[in-house]
Figure 1 (cartoon, rainbow, N blue to C red):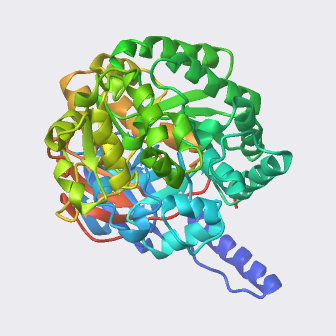
Figure 2: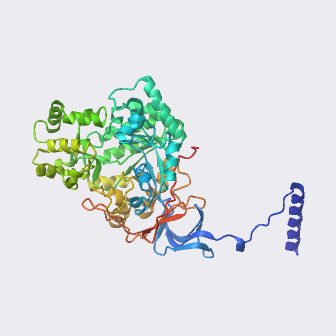
Figure 3: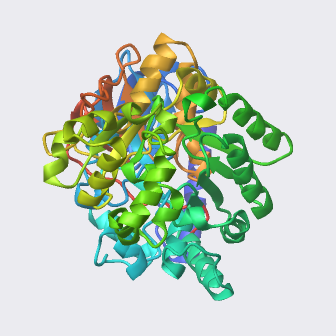
Length: 562
């Protein structure tokens, strides 16, 4: 009787409210009236991204969000995925990719989604903004259909990528916009121009400022110049990321420079692909980590990322001394063709001997592998070591190097076998270490030419296979934390990176017993195994280990940006 009286009282109250407001009362739906979920993932081993141990449960999705997590036995859904024996985790975040242009050409992002990546952060040496003739020339483009980051994001979403993508704005691009590839300090007006473009990108949602201080033209910038630009990013709540100025002989000094830039700028610091490069520098990961820990102890928020391979990948032109790059690619090629300058370069690279300074960090020319070329006549060298190329051409290594760069207009990519496994594992054990594969999205078929670095296809599964399951370097929950909540928090993605109600529905579902990389340096174009389902913004892009063709990715903006 009391329940009936209470119901009548509530009905009368609703009628009174309706009379006053002119609206009809709306009945609250009972449990049976609730709409079914769109996707229900049942009976998975949930690793939620926080570092907590796994537990068995279900995850329900509605639209592009996670609607519920837990024991959802009575729940109904339009689509059900049986995750028995599989780990269900938040979607994995690549802290350093280069997919800003590849996604516009091929939005499928096969190499990314087939290793569990749902989101990528890009912008290291160059960025999609600002745009003028200077920046377009070095990218080999005549034009792009955007003038600001908002415009780029519109073009990205029109291309319908399979993954989400956010970006930094870079020192290299704002410097090139303002002053080309000049090897000098900027004027006051040029520095103001650079500041303005950093501010514009930050207003449109850039994650912060990034610098590739080993590459021109950012390599021409002083520490003080970068600090001035970083102060602008800091005002908007963004951070500072860096491919530091040295990864070898002056590794610790370069780490401390990055820390100083963040400390004086007043923001967080991300050191990209932290490594100790060159046999003479193996073991320097220990003092590099100590420098980071010392900064963290005094309150500087410093973190890093790495890829799990003992070889790096970059342009073959990285072997050429920095001064020869001044003025950009055309100037470099002119110097390589000029007999006098070529003689000077020969002397610097060989010391009057036989190419002993070429590929020093990789142990010499035999440690440098030609990965990719743009000129058909050079394709036969892909996969060969530089020493082998010189022998095949009947040249000294230094001449083969110069002539290949000239013939390929400095577009040749190379792999440098320069790191130790001990340093990789020591870095990986640090709780602030994330994963950045340093490679853009690629197809996984015969359209891929050359020998790309295997990190493009296998980095995340390789960590779970080699460093979690086989070598016990880190635990599974901690690996997933480094893949998800740690990078999401780093760049201000407040609604991704953790499996909980209300977050965006990015999920990676994998077999913990079989997940592994297959890509090798010899045969790199191979997707990983054990990645069973991948969901981006509520839509499966990988289902049962196969690509679905769906492309629901979105632009990612820093939290608080418009």
